[in-house]
Picture (cartoon, rainbow, N blue to C red):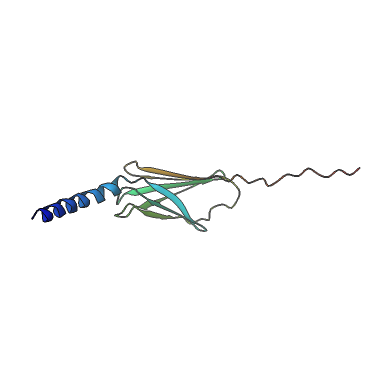
Length: 120
């Protein structure tokens, strides 16, 4: 009898803890594909409109998506991400204000500059 009671209490605790863990999860956002641009996210409120903004080389692209029942979304853009060298910033914000940002820093844009050889 006590064993059944303990199992019931543990089961109830797990049932309550699972949704609470997902509700408190950190929001994340990332680029899933660059051609055409696809951004994915997780950890947002469920069934909410999410605004996605991608910025690279002084260009800004915006799209909206609706998060799933698990808080994930996929935003598909009708453009390719520019291939020019530069930092890419992706941010996503849902209607309740939950926000995630991802930054990809391009730090090898200039190549190696070698001074000309002077022959004398």
